[in-house]
Length: 257
Ligand SMILES: Cc1cc2nc3c(=O)[nH]c(=O)nc-3n(C[C@H](O)[C@H](O)[C@H](O)COP(=O)(O)O)c2cc1C
Figure 1 (cartoon, rainbow, N blue to C red):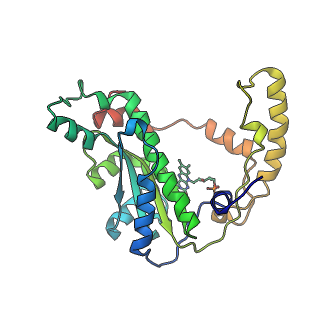
Figure 2: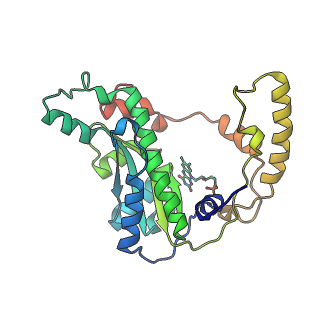
């Protein structure tokens, strides 16, 4: 396998959930934000934005929404949003109607593509942060309370929160979490879903279960994590509650899904 410093940074990436109480300098922030802006953007719509959460009371609110206290301690905290609000403003100035039933960028297609754009920007920022020796954790937990997030960040019509990103100097050194054998995730030409392929996959998964079960998560340092297939079965048996339904929240924000 070839390697370089970028590949090394990516291969050693692991979520960091404890940060030193040290601020991040302006030049570093400049680099992180510039990198995010250079991510690819579907149809060049640049349809994402990021809110810097600087106010400590607001960080505390984010931690409460996410149910994860370390969110409040992040020296840098961003919430990335899918953003067709700015584009509505631009289109309106050119005389285009942006009423919900007419606005072309409020479509379900743009909703998903704007999410993709936001995720790519966030990931570019995350990678740059690791390459500089910083640590990050991506925060889906902020979507536990979309209404609360929309209200706290004053997210206007045609925006939708995608993910948070907490960044700081690492104050922990977790092991890199195992990844599944490549044969389970990369396929040639077509998806191998027949019985023979399934049997081969189950055997690989059994090996991966054993590997994962040797990993210790620093959040539960007293015991190894559950086998991969037990984690999947546990989550697969849970029903999503009302708060996690996307459709009503997306409609409330003006998107036509
Ligand atoms: C979309 C997404 C949402 C995530 N949300 C959270 C979160 O809310 N809190 C958290 O502590 N980790 C979160 N994570 C981090 C994952 O738990 C982590 O990436 C995964 O367990 C693999 O571990 P690693 O990042 O150390 O390789 C999230 C990751 C992704 C990609």
